[in-house]
Length: 268
Image (tube, rainbow, N blue to C red; front, side):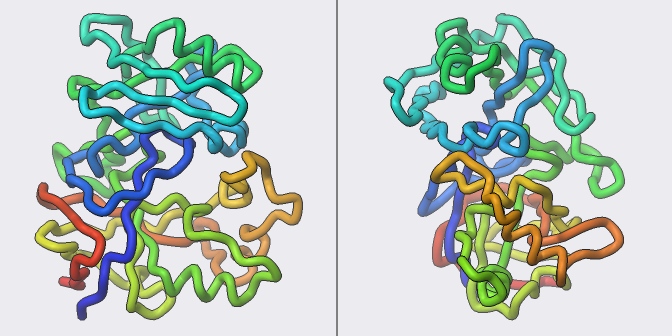
């Protein structure tokens, strides 16, 4: 069976605005530049759009030199330099998974604190900063960025089309923050996949993505949808023993470049 890669997105800042790409390099820990930066609070706890919907309004654009350009409504843009590898590392965690990224400069932290209305800091995952994938689903050496748990997330376009057919007001695919969107399948066909090839890169399909209130955040307004959609509707037909699932988590089994329009082949 073969389908088509319809779109590619990364989220350079965890919970920040999406960035559409025509091609992306697949690295061990996910797509290059995806979720390599993250906001933490004064105590070192990671912050996401689940609690702070305004995070989704921050546009982060990676520069060729590794630095980051930040933009947000009613603010001046800011260039964030790459933290020195000899600089301060912060012991933090993503859903209990420990990680020690580098702390960004004070100017950046002040900019973010002002926009979010509370003291926060920015951290960066450099090449020396490693974080393992949950051993229940991984092989030895598998790693992940600052994403919730797995290197990539894939969703079929047909899954969203089915959901939107049940909603009074349709929602965009990016409410679900996928890296890869596949066209030409049946709705939720990805639930039955075990291994796929996108272009020349193979991936294991390891675990359904369990959804939460983050799906109710309108990332263009930085606010939760007061109706509780689309999560309310998903509960009605996508709820299982482990929660509401939508999309599948992937672990790369090779490196290379994926491109919009690539063939997506189901191996197993």
